[in-house]
Length: 157
Ligand SMILES: [Zn+2]
Image (cartoon, rainbow, N blue to C red; front, side, top):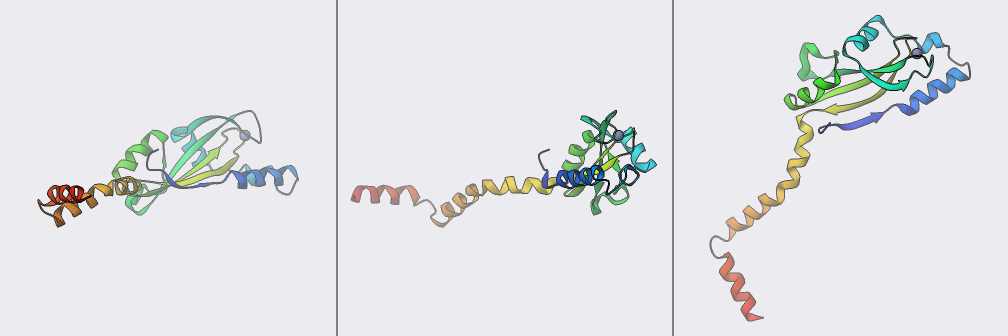
């Protein structure tokens, strides 16, 4: 997505949890605890993936996108489909997206990543075109005389 920024990747934390699970430091009950709300969100707003669940290995993971931000008002904290995000990104200045992977089989769930979306992310691209503004400013300081002065200097060399 074009305005995506400040991406935080949680794959290291996920690997750490899976290691703890293998080592028996945490039980599957501790990590396979998706709430009914989360599983419903996965069913109705989730994005299917090709990735197998690391716990039960019988279902593919579903990604759920939760959105947060003051501009969202009562929609804050709701799950949205992936297709809805670019539309929101063009209408709002900034909002936070949390991506959670869920297994509808065994209820494994973990935060995948978080990032910002919104029109504020486009401002950086507009600043790159500031050369144009500088050129306009210099033209204004030497009204009309510009090309003639330059020609005279060239003749003196
Ligand atoms: Zn599973």
